[in-house]
Image 1 (cartoon, rainbow, N blue to C red):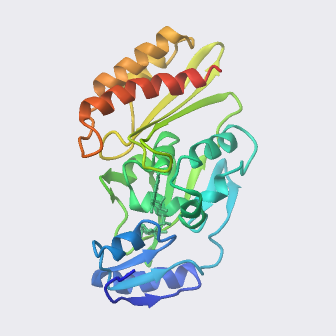
Image 2: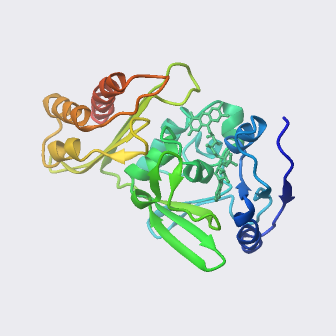
Length: 285
Ligand SMILES: Cc1cc2nc3c(=O)[nH]c(=O)nc-3n(C[C@H](O)[C@H](O)[C@H](O)COP(=O)(O)OP(=O)(O)OC[C@H]3O[C@@H](n4cnc5c(N)ncnc54)[C@H](O)[C@@H]3O)c2cc1C
């Protein structure tokens, strides 16, 4: 690896990290977490930060816990922490199912959940989970703490509401009820590649009807999003293949997919239909 020269800072507390970040951010200073996105871009000299604030020795931010109805995930919790359930119940089952699609095991051992959110790749699995489940993101700066809903956090391709002097300290995922069901779909060309399309379907079943449906799409547009067209069809209906097909067709018709070297827009549109249907069918299996 041959990055440009940079100054290296190693804070031991969140307060120190935030203070250093505040000082160096205007001079192209950035946080280094797992390094699995930042370091490759430095090696290629696509990123040339003047300062790196390495948070890997910061105390008290490497655990997962339950806090006021949320699963709270500190900013040093690695992807691999979710290879097996961290908690009983639907969300404990959901996270490993998604985690196995992220990159390869060595990358999952270093990369962090919160680093993925900060990086905001539209094809990031954790960004999709955060958006679909209405996560709350904790940002800390020298001025204090602010909590931002995932829906407001992701602003576009690798672009977020985080100011350059703010550290993402934790993310809070609302716990899922026992009556909630989920299905997850991802299509990528090879195991470990970023997904071309991902779908997370979550809903509650009450009195035989679908309540509070959430259809999240990732890798399709410039940021993860919920699909209102599909959710409207599902809400209040009894789960059936006919309803699922209608929701999948509505989702596919309503998206404006990206076009890149990996796939034309028409291919991603097709994947949305197949993915929504697959994710919904899993909810009744
Ligand atoms: C070969 C390969 C395949 C991959 N495949 C996938 C995949 O399929 N799905 C997927 O989601 N990801 C994939 N990744 C990316 C990987 O998941 C990264 O771990 C993740 O994107 C970033 O997390 P990190 O902790 O490594 O962050 P870093 O690389 O350290 O940082 C990334 C960016 O986020 C900022 N940042 C990090 N943490 C914070 C924080 N706490 N506060 C403020 N800013 C912060 C950094 O300043 C930097 O700009 C892949 C990576 C590689 C190398």
